[in-house]
Length: 180
Length: 180
DNA sequence: ATAAACTTTCAATATTATTTGAAAGTTCAA
DNA sequence: TTGAACTTTCAAATAATATTGAAAGTTTAT
Image 1 (spheres, rainbow over the protein chains, first blue to last red):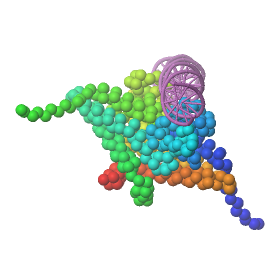
Image 2: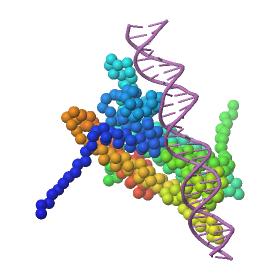
Image 3: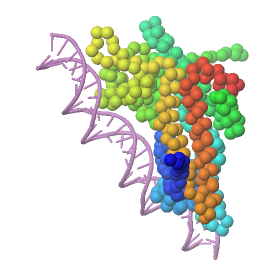
Image 4: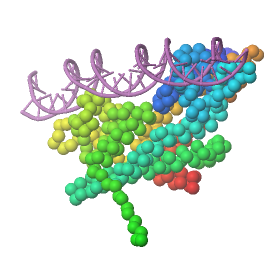
């Protein structure tokens, strides 16, 4: 009996693959507090080779003009999409930041600012609680818990700052060494 | 002129501080895809000194029986809350995991499984795209982008696994050294 | 100054996620 | 086996969030 090795290499059409990616990125986004459409637009830009107009985004993702506009605007604010003018064209075009490391850095910075900072702030605020002989133990427990949460949050904050300020090479090297 | 230093140490009542913490933890949670109520219940358990019954949770947070039950259940599944029987009592009581490092480890593991794993999976799926002479360049660009996203996701995945498997001491020491 | 070409805004609408609470289910002491 | 005490479920109500699209606002070429 002849032994045969058969390899199945599963390929697909580019458009199908793009659609899958856009969908998955969209649902990942919504788990991360980034709205589905914005994440989909971002995925579209990540994989686009040419600058796209608002119209093209609308058509590809089947969303309204206003929706496209607002989300593209936010992506520009976040530094993940750039305005780009095509010569001769009146219309605005946009390109996405293609360097995935830069994308990660920006997302880290934004989420840190909007999520970690407020909690550290509040933890500091509630650190000083009046203690009476009646509730001494409870206050001690509360203060200890808040302290330890604050330490962890600050550690995370510092780490993320360092990570998002570093360049990719440093990051990858350090982590590879760290976790060998 | 006499120079005076005046320190204001702002203290507050324990209940006020707890309420603030519960609220902030709730809104942090909702940004992280954890629903507000569940995060609030979790905060309540974090700062409670005694085991609480479902009833007490309902009353403190002014939520319905069903809501309390479902969210406590999920917190138990996540390993953040434990059932605890009080001697003589028929009722079920619950306590929260108080070690904030363990809490972080568990949350990291869960989010990794539900968010990072699916994206790595999809990225692998869409890596092989048929290339024709017509769209060669576009396919090359797409494949390169997907590859780099996959690398970053895998790096994050590996890092998180190591972090969530390590003990707090190791983690803190390593990061302190790393980012000195 | 005008109007065509394009972008932005926002009130109304649709969608999605959360919460409620009453009914069904469970457990246990007697 | 019963029923009181408690827990769980889930369909309906509510609340939060995202989307639409028509109208208002800009910009630019002439």
